[in-house]
Image (cartoon, rainbow, N blue to C red; front, side, top):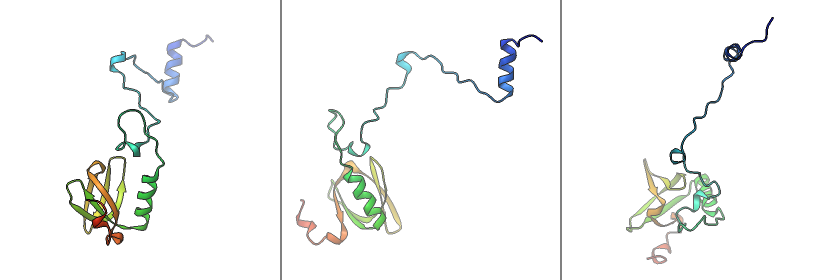
Length: 128
C-alpha cells in the first residue's frame, strides 16, 4: 500500500475533527493597535495622559467594602446635585447606585466627591 497523498491526509484530518488555524496576513495599517496591559483601569480618571499612573488599588478596595456592607452612600456630582443610595456595581468608568427602587449609573468623571450617608453631619461644610 502506498503512502497517502497530502490531499488524503487533509481529508483524514478534517474527518477526525482537527481544525487548521488560518490567519490572514493583514497590512500594518489594518492591524489592531497593541493594548497596554500594564495600565491600571481604576486610575484612568487621574491619568494626565503622560503614561500609566501608579495605583494603590484603594478605590477598588473601598468600593468592594461598601458593596459588601450595603453602605448607604451620598454622591455629590460636579453640578452640586446629591444622590443617595447603595453602590451595587462599579467599573473603571461608572458606578451603579441603587436608590430605593431606582438604579442610576453615574460616570466617575462627573462625581465631585462621595461619602457614607451616616457621616453626613459634618460633610456639608467640608467641601464647597
